[in-house]
Image (cartoon, rainbow, N blue to C red):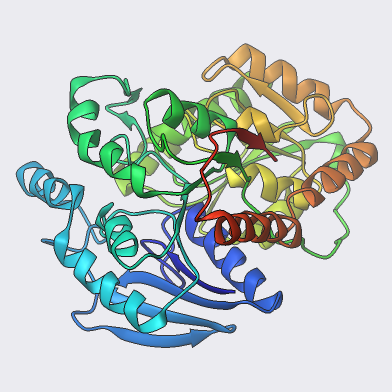
Length: 403
């Protein structure tokens, strides 16, 4: 098949897990013999065409007021940016020109910030069927996270309803809907998105690293880990409080970057703990050095691919029971999900894992992670593409299939 995938960013740009997931899918499709083109945005003012691992990359200039990934901007300017992003006719024109040139069998859209839902109309006008994967909450609220001011937002609020009105209306252009978790699926369906499309859940994929020896615990100590953006939404302060409550025999390795003032305040407040502030490190460097990963997110993460990455390295997880996180923790086998911010529950879960058979935990984590391998997830998308390509002229069902 000739497939066009569209996502806001693509390698080397990376803001979150979506860019990794989309790249794994694109390259997995190439490995299966499909012709794959990728449409994404970049900071330059001209169009650029590249090749990477068999994928043809079309990088388009952003048709909006500023590049949103390069620093803070004033609230009035941000508001205007998001208003323009509700439906961007210039982005529609750019994508339409590319689709005419490529003439794909289908368009697979993912993160749409900077493009807007106008790209669905571009495909519809050319008779190209559309499959969409929700990897964040962009369609519901422009901040994509439904989290602001250290609290989760109400998706039924007036601001969400106003910003999503046109997006919800245009979602009728999508013929096949995919979400990366049951949580994301249920939320979008409840709010009335994709009323004409059959839907299914396809979790994100991960690379399966080769098995690596793990260092033995030193004097019986347990090393906890936290990896990600160092900010309140990710629950880093919860991780620090967990370490403090556990006391001697537990240390915490923190990988990631954040606002320098915020990081300095945390380092000062928790100076008495056994901590290692690692800065930015790759998962391949990080996971072999820890025993248990903490994912104490305060916001409802759509999935939390770091949970899957931990499992692929044989590391169990204690995470929040918010969003899609509990769906990818096999309770008691690969970790536990606890109420967000409940320090006592997190501490008890860590202690249960620390007291368990570590070799058995590792094998259970590796076996669970294998269910999310790139090959398996790519195969599921290929089946979805084939159904869409075959059935595009037939009446559409709205039956949900969770896989």
